[in-house]
Amino acid sequence: MARAIPFSPPALAFLLAVICYSTCAVTLAGSPTDFVRSSCSATRYPDLCFRCLASYAPAVRHSPRQLARAAMAVSADRARSASTYVSRVIAGAKSVRPRDAGAVQDCLENMADSVDRLRRSEEELDGLGGAGSPEFAWHMSNVRTWCSAALTDENTCLDSLEEHCSGGIRSAIRPKVVEVAQMTSNALALVNRVWSK
Image (tube, rainbow, N blue to C red; front, side, top):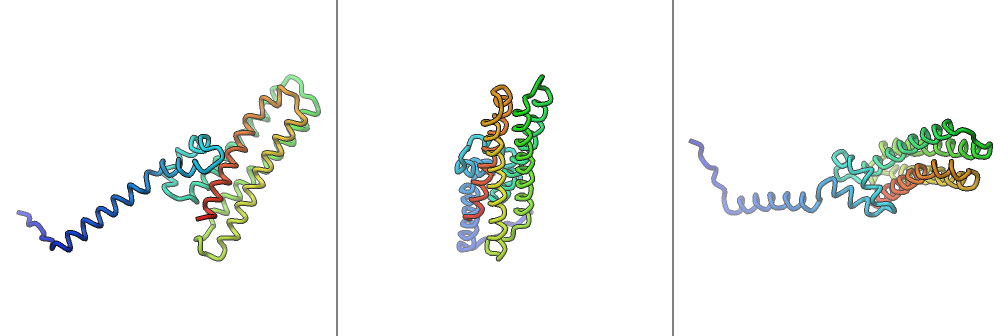
């Protein structure tokens, strides 16, 4: 027969306090999905942010750094997909004016630069030390600079389409590029949260 282990009143009180604290801490932290939703609420496009990043919640858990990294990865993947889509739209067009072709080529180059900058930002976040480390500010500055430059590339693409493309091609391409720019804007907002922590 198993014997019960007697606890003294102070030991029992301590054990109950530890259990209560652990339960309260988990409750206050919320689920990883709640963390993603809460973090996305601080971005410019919160619905898009949550829709694109909710599936990363189990991997991200409660890490602002991992969430920012996921946002940059999604932005880079969307930029690459948008570039492929733009190339198919042009290839499938019956006739393309030279002006449209030039604007689209500029857009594709800007999107390629954007992908490169976002991937570099991801890599930089991977090598980032703790917030107190001497290199933290330098690495975070690089991440912010590259992420901002990626957003500039995407906006330059949009400007080129607006100024130089005919309506049909512009209306086919623009929504894809706008979504990429919105995701990159969200990624930059999430990077800024890492910086402020």
